[in-house]
Image (cartoon, rainbow, N blue to C red; front, side, top):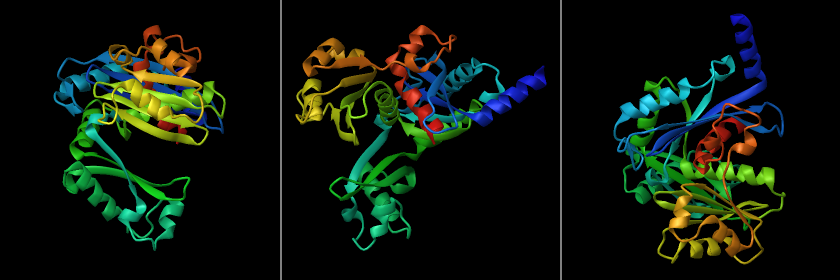
Length: 333
């Protein structure tokens, strides 16, 4: 019987890809396990959701102040997973909060002379000319010497033909703390990704599944430091906003500027600490009414596909958007 279970798990691993998204917040560790068949346009399924509370002060502003409870929470969350051979080869991605990450976009022309056309066309750095300039820009923007930074970057071409270099940087100690803490819990990380980026990925997936291909919708991720908002349209992410910011009087002002006047919105998805919207005087029903469309909290429930063991509170919690988005990155690669 044991051999049969092992064989079944091996076959499942061959035909499906499994991944875990680990969102470590100040209040809890949230885990999402996601699977997807290895074929084109296969649906994504949420297999398991877990949440383990953390004591106050264990994690502050992205710092693992006390690693022991984080390690214990990770072990407890993974210890609740079914003993299934297919789940033993999980690709695991862990979150990094926005407060610990600097993101910026710089015109390619500012970083390198225009005699390297291949950079913008293929999005790489074939002669190693761009990376030193990227590291210098990250060092300048973060105010931390490059040796203490972990930097990721990519070249993106806008619709007007101008190339931009997207840079994400964080203190190397944040990356090392996550890799080491996960290792103490017996987990090997395959990726570390920002919470807002993961939440955006999750809610864009929801929009792609639930809305028409030409839909325009807002994605909002709320955390203790404020709002991250994006306008998503047929061409992808068309605009983004952060709040609080000096140029915006309120969250409503920021979101109306984000949406623009070009066309009505089809939907607004909100994830994270959505109670902050009500605290700001803009609960979801009011938000939807002000834009003339549905304003919905992110929910994992539509993607659980009959996984009955998942708690109802987790299925409907908008705080699982980041964990889902982290796992989604790994099964789609």
